[in-house]
Length: 89
Length: 266
Image (cartoon, rainbow over all chains, first blue to last red; front, side):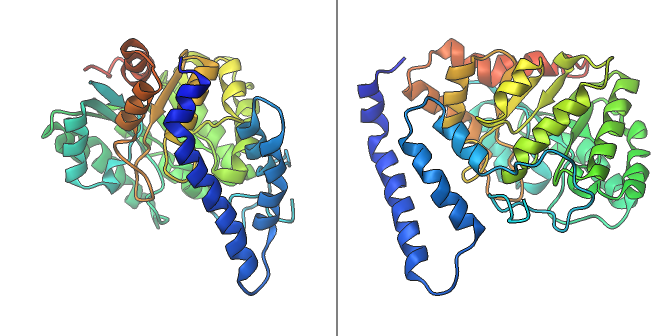
């Protein structure tokens, strides 16, 4: 199994690139006109998870972006998915 | 390096992709019935599709030395109208006689509706009636966690179900544990933007171990990569996984699960 140092050597630049892309996305949404929506709010609410001292941050982020309801719905009003629970949830 | 691609939608791919798969070492691939990007307007459309899966694609794959197998169903995205879904399902027994059909799939849920769940359970019963393995699709993005829980709850009601003959696909960090803990197989789908990245799939493998786990590209008409499995194998190598561990996850595990169908012969 690779050491922390091995993984940093292997993946730090790529992870840095992804973090910068996320920071730039947040700036871009702020800079442009109009209103953001529930997806942007969900993303911002998930960001503090990254700084938590826990071994399952990826799982926690996915759970933060998940529909919290438990019962099947009577009918779907659309077929796709948008990445964050819609406000009715 | 030889490998098995256990989930690919080749009806949406070009013949060039078969060549790339063969060059990368793909010995066999499995194609579950799915949503082809738009809703079909009649059961006849599905009849044609099932013929394409069972007659045409095996021949197209064979030109590149790849064995092609399929799974049949009406996918959950088109299964919200129970009357239409049952009309399509009535076609399936005729095609179960085809020598490359392995089982029922990819059934499951899309938006987690009551009708989807009803048709899912009727598919499970169809598989049980014919003694077939089952391949299950879990929903996308925000619907996955709830859908996976609904699927697990539903399957728990089938007392005669052999859980070792069921694979629940598209697991991620928040759904893999309940699937494996319940005794089912779990599939990790390697997608560029959704589902698992290569590194996240390897993380899941490192955390949960290789037992009852496979990885697939699920390449289709959307953003996807037919070479995702060999690319993940390469990434495993860079993360110092040994040749045996890589061979197990990309070849032996899918072979073990799929060989539960006597038709899966390499």
